[in-house]
Length: 148
Ligand SMILES: Cc1cc2nc3c(=O)[nH]c(=O)nc-3n(C[C@H](O)[C@H](O)[C@H](O)COP(=O)(O)O)c2cc1C
Image 1 (cartoon, protein in one colour):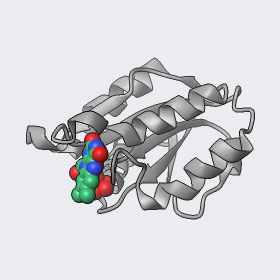
Image 2: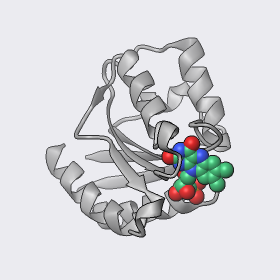
Image 3: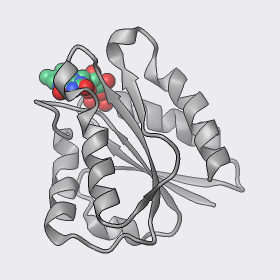
Image 4: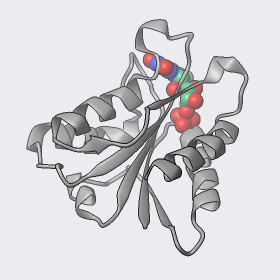
């Protein structure tokens, strides 16, 4: 089993969560590769394995700057992703009530539109909850792995 974690982040929190998930899941039998979304294009979805989108939310419910190129290119090229299976670990803050966790939602909606199949529920971490996302990430990713 191969898991590709694609990270969209502005200030590194999502990357920290991805690193924790990689440490927890990568055991030889399950291989994990973590890639920052910077400079990725839609061909990344041709890689073997399943995908975990780990992204925060910025601006007014936008994907982070380092995820914008990949997100926009997917929307413009619209590749057939019907062979792709993915999960979403989203980070956000409920203080932004209107756009809470929209970064993960945007990727989720777009990947579904392109034919990909989501495994499990989209996780929506809330920075205002006081719970550390890297702690939730561990529990969430173990449950996600079981669903795979
Ligand atoms: C300027 C700014 C805008 C934000 N906009 C949103 C938003 O629209 N919706 C949301 O749910 N969270 C929003 N957030 C919260 C971040 O997504 C959250 O703090 C996240 O944990 C940051 O993760 P990162 O360090 O990986 O970028 C915003 C944060 C900042 C600083």
